[in-house]
Image (tube, helix red, strand yellow):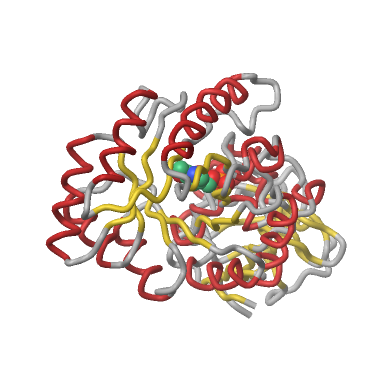
Amino acid sequence: MVRAIARIDLGAVERNCARLKATLREGAELCAVVKADGYGHGADACASAALAGGATRLAVATGAEAAQIGRRFPHVPLLTMGALTPEDLDAALAAGSDVAVWRQGFRSLVADRARAQGCRARVHVKHDSGMGRLGNPDPIEVKALARACAEDPDLELAGVWTHFATADEPNSDFFEEQLDRFAAVAEAVKAEFPATIAHAANSAAVFRDPRSHFDMARCGIAVYGLDPFQGDPAERGLAPAMSLRSYVADVKQLAPGDSAGYGQTWRASAETRVGVLPLGYGDGVRRGLSNNAEVLVRGRRRSLVGTVSMDNTTIDLGPTTDVEPGDEAVLIGTQEREAILAEEMAARLGTINYEVTCGISARVPRVGE
Ligand SMILES: *Cc1c(COP(=O)(O)O)cnc(C)c1O
């Protein structure tokens, strides 16, 4: 019996990476994205499993993440993708990470810091092909930056890259537009500097269009067996790695009209029994799931009733139930023949699977198995 636990199926992470690697065009590398503690799954253990499954590189978002992963995997090429403060830049470079560059000012800062640390910094020049976020939107400036990096003795031009805004939206053709814009930039940079790798694809793009694979794909969500298109991951040969489990701490009898939880948002319409689960929004079981979710106990779906509180959640077990205190409760994952996907929880919350697993709080231990 455990209060709340996120079990991480590391074999699934490994197989998901093998599946992604097999989908990539010949010669393209798989870079496993382990930012935000591996999308809430535990970065270190998932990175190991991803490498075992065929990933040859890792990526993170922040300087602190680079420090953690760089220390743990000193021989695996690492890319820090995010914008960095000077302090974060120092941390990323000290960790041996490649960094992203899209302005001349930051390029010279990277060169200064690398020289101060006595190393050469590997940089990936970022083209903003339409995401409208990080990156340089002007192809001429991207090419000039690449040249400046290649000519700088403190820098090594390692990559040219971009990020898609709509790879997961099958009905949008903006993806193709971004792809065409980036392909032209990548081709020009590689013509001048053939050792440079080009990369663009996230998980959705990998499944959507092999033209997006270039020399490497940066996959996060699919590594964890979550569907980049918010459908059923099994349809793409992916297996969810995380399950979120708790147990029935108490079973109580309610009479018609009795309520459960803060604000009396649910009342028993007839005699029934209610199970109390000792986890709540303090664990990342979002309050938006109040009267709006199902939980598995003894292989059956039970309605979450009442308001999710910080440390407790209630479920309706019906008037005649064999459920007893101590029984396992599954909020995400499988039990007997039933399954609740993170995608289902996300749909109920009006969000995406990414936010569901990232939102499972640090109070819930991650246990790899
Ligand atoms: C998070 C991230 C990825 C991974 O995207 P998924 O959709 O999780 O595969 C790739 N590239 C960048 C720049 C990212 O920030």
